[in-house]
Length: 180
Image (tube, rainbow, N blue to C red; front, side, top):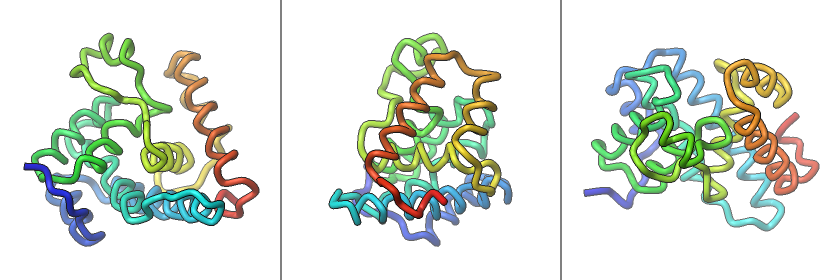
């Protein structure tokens, strides 16, 4: 049965370690979480209603699947781990939908992924996915650097989704200092 209650930060770190995530993955998840919370706070300051706790915990756990694989499939593996831990559905969705700017149903079919939605839908999913694109290792990087790196391995349609996500976030946060 899936829980409705979000785990604490401490529980989230425990789940990451228990699943076998490396120190580097833990540091990455913590950096993504800090940036995602700043983005969520900027959204709330502009009148949006973003669940800060969900963003924080979802971002901490977004790469839990990297305990088993570093391929793009870590999103699917991570969502399965999250289900086995009885994590709330919104956290499972963040994990499942954070890769790239999302994976379309056609791309998921080509990758032989289970039939599901892998494109961020909620504001919290989009914030975590976006923050993840701005953290390389545990360092903040520009969206241009991320796009340049991803362009070497992803089709132009996937790069366009990352650009759309970036533009959507810029509209939502305005001239916020959170990205500086």
